[in-house]
Length: 388
Image (cartoon, rainbow, N blue to C red; front, side, top):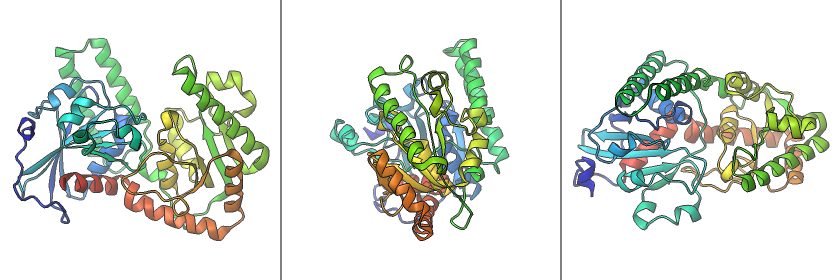
């Protein structure tokens, strides 16, 4: 029941919330907080705060009944409470960045008001109860990033995470676990690429080459059957694209112990994409006219999809299974393929036609500007949530 959430609901709150008022947003800092997975949402909120459109704060021990368990849950859920003081109306909103479309934090799903999910696939959502399904909304393509012009918020985030970790040390976590969590979070924040490193515009110059760089998964460390199929598909993609595109293709398999051992002839010669090297790799991505996207493990929407839209590459993507809050339209925002040979044909079509490439870049940029840029995406998500 709504009363258990500690919310006071206005009787006549508008269903179509077509006005934007100053909202109070409180971010839950718990054990599931992950700066890498949650950076996209946090950057959007920070930018809204910088525009004085939300009043942003971090909370560690809220009186939200549904979050008592979430505080000490390892599931990487980003949970906020959003309040419109003008109407005395609040919503508990959760953002689920997990790859798997069939994975849920059921306690949050039952007790929050809105549950945004990164990988949203209708048959998997359909397995939920009716009341749960009504809370689920898809997230637009996202990626891990940070804001370079928010030093105060960077400091506040670090301070609050340290305070949260120390608080957990006294009650639940060992010193070793706490220190490891702090190191991981600090490392993640330090290696995030700032938003200006991702973004490019349709008027910029691009090299007439195709970027395709992908990783393989070690079957000994992941689910073997699923990993094997994913690896085989990626190896075939790299091999066929290299054979048919030659020097027009840049990239290959990311260097890992597994790929170096089994596929030394298909390794990428680009900057490694390990986190410490990601800022350099992200800046490099903006140079190429075309970037190829394939589905991630678990058929998830990969971060490279959002990165390509930000970089304003011509996006050539394998059929996208999952849904988005703002529809990404094939033939308008990206060109699709189902086989490696089809991918080659589409890439060559863009390399050989400046007009087609320019139109695609212009439409993709408009989609990024209105639906994917963190500040606009979060404003859309908050508006949707406050209208329910």
